[in-house]
Length: 210
Image (cartoon, rainbow, N blue to C red; front, side):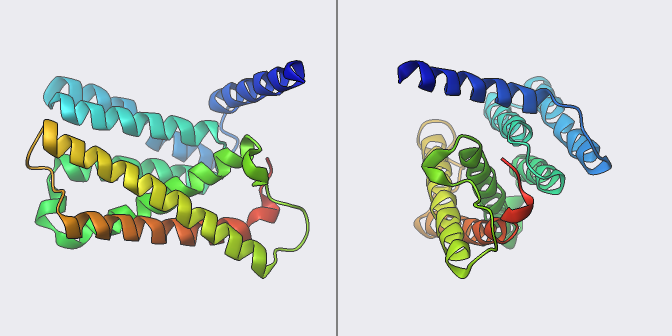
């Protein structure tokens, strides 16, 4: 039993590396990789010209775009994930969240959606909780279930991010915005983005392979 589980774990790790190192197979995949390449460039720039807080944020973005590639997302979703994560980080560096009110909620909604989709597909790859799409026609029940899973992932990831913001405000930089209304609004729109992403993934699941 243990040998079978170890073998499956080893196969998954090999698949993870293979997907990470695979060559782009379309123009959209090439464009996604070009956008992704901006992440390590942003890390280097943050190290040289910004502070260690900004460097940490850019490193998180770099991790996110690597996971997006390893998950073998559809090229359009892959590129959108990288672009939105980079935009979210640079909006923070440019202090746009404080200067333009609607950008904060819009970014949390969009990032919540793509991260929930990324998490859902990564769980599918690892056969977690039998989340891989089933063959056959998409049903209302499967769309509702997908939306609920997406909402749960979006809410969970939003809570993690808000905790990081609280930690940053408390121990690093008091200018980080952690107000009660801001936190609840960010979590709510992140969950909404995840819900919509989960429903869309369920609807399009027939064209997605594991």
